[in-house]
Length: 287
Image (tube, rainbow, N blue to C red; front, side):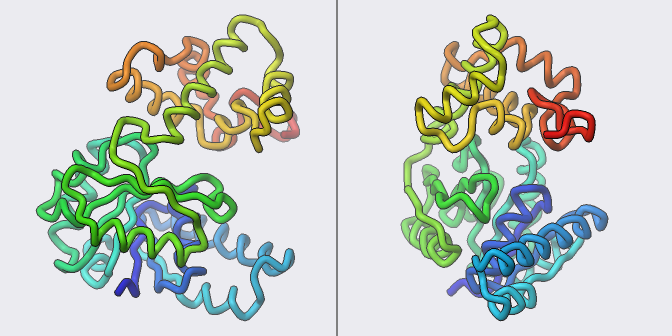
């Protein structure tokens, strides 16, 4: 039975996963090497609880109980030594993930399950960094985690059925719907999203329309909740570019990153987190 979940990485995804984990009834520890990042994550998580209470999304008692289940730590080894499930949410960099999984494999108890929050990377390859590939799975959360209803669960080559069952049970307690698929580069959602976002950049490069017009057309014409530029700025254009590079390497030419997207990332226009992406999020820009 899963009682304690450790979430590794206190960035946008990690803090969102920690929030839904605590709301789902799990004792949850958010781990990061940076004390400053942890403090920022705690502030944002508490703000999400406050907004949830104000908007009647969660009762005040439930919010307080959930916050009591939350803890924060900069010691990965100590935290995972007493946990039942680890959900890794570090950047989409294989070397970083390799270091994380080799470390947790040494220190986590034998019964502990490992999940990687990845939008494109191979859970089979990530599982190879451990001595328990049967207990490794991918759980692809969506941003913002506390609002998006889906978790995409991806089985690696050696993932045991018990691990699939546990991942689905945890996702359900977090209040999420799930789809379970077999591993293939990009899974389901990332393959489609990457194509749409990349094509939008090609249209912008070709002068088809302004970003606002392209986003509006996709939202109203195809019933997408966000336009591709809005979504790209939210998740980070550098993240979008890294995903496209991986899909280009593994699935071929149709995923070649648009030169304009590459140019934006080189210029440091990464989206909301940098204050400038396709849109301007500075005080001057007003977005």
